[in-house]
Length: 507
Image 1 (tube, helix red, strand yellow):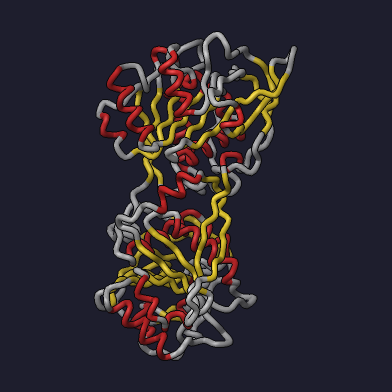
Image 2 (cartoon, helix red, strand yellow; image 1 turned 180 degrees about the vertical axis):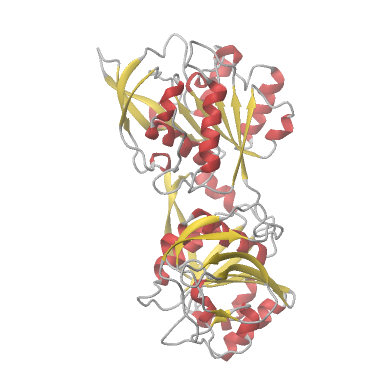
């Protein structure tokens, strides 16, 4: 495994080579995923983020990487960054599909007449433009900027509310940028300084705590043959990293570049029949709880979760799945391979790179060599009858790979569980990343892996966790957080800093 680096190139006027700014993404990716991304050319669009001079009020070198990462999460969008607004005058501009303005330079407030004319021509000809936060003040002496930006900074108006928390209301759910988005909370500067009378399509608003009025937080319109998306959100890196804000800019940028917003990533959860004593192997109840946590998490967006029993009645439900989560009894009755038809469908999905998460008994394949080979290739490891062990103990669970995305927000915890150990790793334990371990068994303890992750050769991701015997353990916050993180990771979704923030109703 290698830490994924997103290289964001900096175009400079008159300079042939591009100077790279390297962003360290928080997720770990395999080389195969990088290759898959690089080879994806169908519908791909190229985006240039234009930033400027840092000053205490706006540190572009801190916010631009976060903005670039948010936009690049749509794998159809290739992102480059320039710190020189004069690049807008370059003929190189035409190789991009959309420009993102993310600057307002106090010392040199306007990159010049040539840059103005080139930007105007770029958008009029059918390309896209996005404006972020104080970019509304980027061209103070250019009258046409009011029409190009839709609304601009008026220094005669009150600038913004005090930096703080407020609610952004989605007021247009028909527009492609905001269709399906819900209103959200953010901590930012609520701009009250935008002026202009150009017709716009209002997408989102927020109410000022100072004067009680509603102000535009996102809007869109056409300019000539081009598209413009504008939002004054995004004062600092934390505001831009807020998942609904990041998604708003990602969608706005895709729309401006001429793409439909990327559909939400589908996570299909397959629950086996309940078994064992009361309170144990409550498969559907457990997945319903995990589904609710993902659906209501304060820092997760852009997903669709679907819960089915045993197997989808309509197998086409799996066609566009990003990941499959299985919580069921294993061996010969395992839902994924219980019939030849299911086996063939599952094999097709795994070959396509769909993520797989198996919980507790679902890490146990049918007891034949062919099935074990398949599960070994899909999941990295499995419970092998006659070799693996499964007594019930109270143990301390310890994170084994703190830097791994699945481990975000994970802390040691103690619980009573039927953790399987002596898991079979066909390629050796070094072939997987151990996520949590415990000292088992108590009478002859050794460090045993209880949860692990693997990236398959085709870029698909697998996660196995041997816990989950008792339904009550899902109420243990780090126990639950790890699995929620792993589900996102398996689906190729960035795990938020601190892990998934979920809450469950008290018993």
